[in-house]
Image (cartoon, rainbow, N blue to C red; front, side):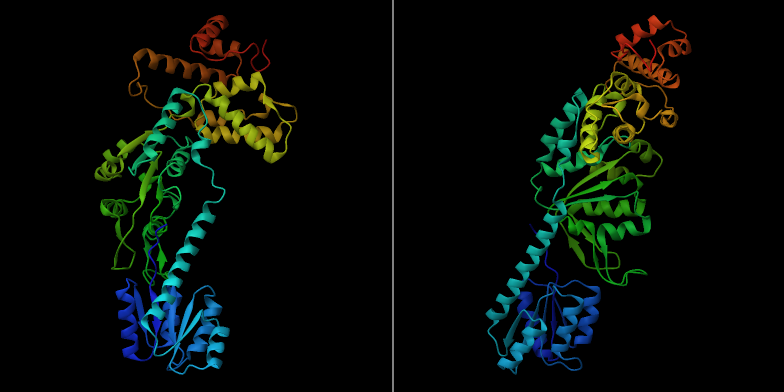
Length: 466
């Protein structure tokens, strides 16, 4: 994994020695901060990150040994290399007991110091890699969780496998609850970057004033409360993948900064002047109508085109047919194990109820419905009485102008609208075929015929009706 090392902190009250150490380390490619006192060093340590400290044993003011003890209390994992012109076995023992990782007597060979610094650099990288691996331990690949056999889901899985192997930016569009985060997780898990960090940010969940700092980091003192330097999420994701969920909720000024970042991976921390650069793959998602957001001036069109290299459009659950039952059984199996419930299946009438609901909350709503039903169920099969009555959920479905979907024929659009009208009538009438037929001004036989033609499950018994 590639992680840029933080600077080395050099503490020495002799100016020539400070400059000599600084030059030596910078020639090896290290960033260096050099100060003349332990007091200055402690102030820097409170606000910035360093991968090691090199300090003289004798300093004006606080001694190197007392400085070392302070570091051990405040930053116990920070390695410290002690330098001294008065080398004795007793002082060496004192330095090691105080917590120094090594001890060098002046004058020393440059190779000795550089070897110690290289060891600390490797240690820091390993610690970062281990932390990243631990953060991903137990993370389930989103690809395994994309359940369904409808044509649209089959095409989605195929597209994920194809695009995941590239570094192309991806824009994931779909209603809330359709599984956008699962798709992003699957893209990372199947990519060349799968062993690197996968970082997620919900742009709608973080206040606008803090989102830039969360994304790009900030310097100490950049704003009230910024008591120390903070790395942003793009730095944490260096070498890996970053997923920006609900990107259409991002403010216009921050969209402009993101656009610049997408050009070459460069950015500046809030309150900083140093230009930094990372190598990340960016995935973005939104449940908003992105074209409408652009037309209303809420989302930059140039940012849309920058993100929209590959576009995924996730189908709502109401368009996935029998996938509703496959997902219900998937959630039933999962919750049955965690709840230790002996519910082995879903009754035919409950299946019918699941199929005829329009699921405005999509897969997330279905998952919650199965969890609720399993909590309440006392028999071996999940019964319709344990499922929600869906009255509130049905009212949540927003009215929209009737129009054909992209690539949809008129006949297919009419069938889709007819299916929705029948589903709504059934829900509003307690899934009674007789009452739904009366509501639609049809005979019961005619309604059953239309449902069969539309491949809608009628069932021999609906909500107890013979």
